[in-house]
Length: 455
Image (cartoon, rainbow, N blue to C red; front, side, top):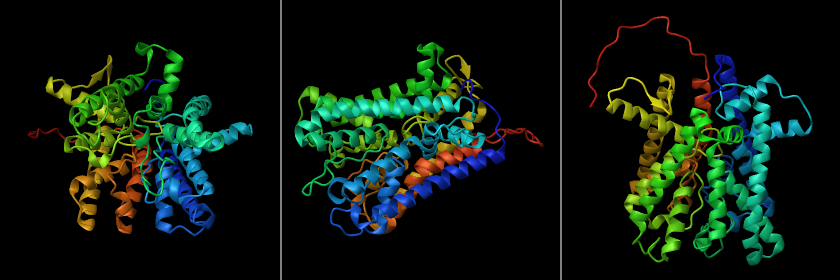
């Protein structure tokens, strides 16, 4: 990434990782304690700790998985707490603290710049304040426009006050890739946006917010500065290209596998099938909203969904998952190997071997966690493996889609999903900060090379 490559001492990288990990944990705990208050629930009774902790983790890690209906269970106070956690989780708690510092005209220290840069996936503190200003202005601009557009529809349905509130909540949730919604009813508590499957205004607005939030703040800044694709950094080019490939490929596969499924797309008109297929593809990029019943997906669609959820959004964005650039680097490495090349190139640039090792490490860790978690939950709950794999991919990828399994799981399985959501949003990030930002020192001892048989 042009302009952001500087060596960072190991101690500073580790400090940034610790601040991020502990900071998110404290926010989750504080959110859980607030949600346990009797005033946070409509019933006026205290919510069990495991449900409050699960909701706080899901909101802070911008996932969207829930054990209780957001619309039915929580009071206005509880919903405001959830919305605040989503905003903090999407931007990063250090970004929120920086916003307060900028408003108070307080100087941002070098250590704070290090942590902010780490939160955005940058390995330099240079230009952080300028980037933060753009992030904050862009975030509230996109969320504001999205809230206005959604309010047009919701005011007609819910009245002025509630309609505007619904527009604000869903705009923030969509932009931060949170996946929380307020559409549930006592008869249908987890319906999400199913009743808006054929509404172009709601669908297009939510999709635009999801994509903008999932591209990454650095990409915004890069596009704003250079305007032309050929002048963008290698990182931005990979993000935009891979995002296009995933969205296009997911759309085609969703149409192919669900076109004749009467429980999903089969009962819609052709234009509405296309709209629902696009929305399904976009929401799998760690958003969590749904306009079709996920439990009714065909087996091939479930497999595609798990892959897209695992990949997630882009580095330095509000999204989770392994990230688009990670998968792009792996794909380019495979292509180079098949062509007999010893280096990996993209857009006229050579990708550093260290970046390839990082991509492999993150992928191995992510896949291991998802498969291990799915096997464990399947064993504990005695439910089919495909359902558990969908839930764990959704948790680790911080997506929030469910096949109606999460609310029915036991407390032990809920704790496992809490850990996976935390690691999916915070763990991989801190792992990257601690490992990828440390000083690249040459080895003191070099061993002789040796060949092994692959394949």
